[in-house]
Image (cartoon, rainbow over all chains, first blue to last red; front, side, top):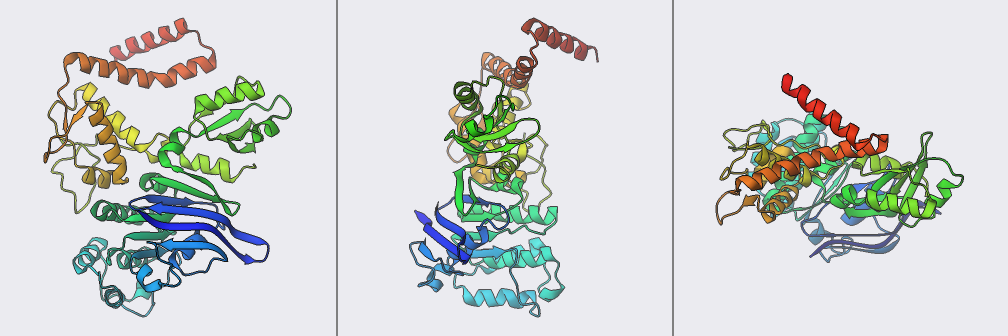
Length: 297
Length: 145
């Protein structure tokens, strides 16, 4: 079943400078999608459009087959949203924020809320403004999870949290996954978190979707090739290959990312460039991200 | 025997935990493969024996801090390979393997550990005879310790 379907989305905040330029992005029930991209790549814009918090200038958005702008109550009732920049009312107490959400969502699960308050060690009488960043984020996660949403949209949920708070957040999300098969779309700069949680990775770059693959495919069917600088024109020859995602010219060699496993990449480079001593290997997400985001294509 | 990363966690239901499975999500090796490799290694080394129970997908994924689908994928593939056995309503257990199968598994494990060394030998231009000599020498030295 399709949970989220964004088709041909265009959005810019300044004329002529698109943030999203023809983005297609859809998510099936039960998927966990990690949204990657540099700062300003449009991840937040994409999530805000999916949530109905922001209008697209072209294209269509469907959440559970609903239009989040025309049917906001029906759509938002089924979504949990947490963002790094979420602002909870500073003068309210934790208990009051939770009560507010309980009134808003008929599907609110009191037992789950009690369990999470206990697990996070939250004091219900504490005012929001006295909480640490990590605790405030835990309150936001609790409010997002306890109405048992079918879709969780998390915008850089671990941003600014210490390693332990991040792990707690991750584990709570994993539990939601195990318990109810919640569909999750999350953006994160912590690529090791993405590697722990995501089944699929979508990378936004230059206002478009550059990579949309399962994490296993990225680990096994993508590779980084280190190609010696000689002969002349190596960079252009690499860029001309349709399987080459981008290159980065470094002092040691030209680094090229391929949509091929290492053996296939080596064979292709040998065939097309006549270079036999390229080093090709698979790589973790962080290295892959740096090569792709920092390169040219 | 229970396996799983020890996790100090209120919902931890395992009575005993040994640090037998550790994943490094940033290594570039898919996590499901890391789990599979380690289970196979422990079976080959004799640490896990026929009939030993594996932790449920839910607890292992919580303990490792990874997506439950990843653990369930590793388990299903191990089951497909005949290494693990699932009986309805019971925990997943290590399948009964004959001594020959265990021996084959040991050699398979060793082979996969040596593949990096083979690649290095090729890239360095070390001749096969030299490489084998180093391996034999290292095995001898290790025995003396």
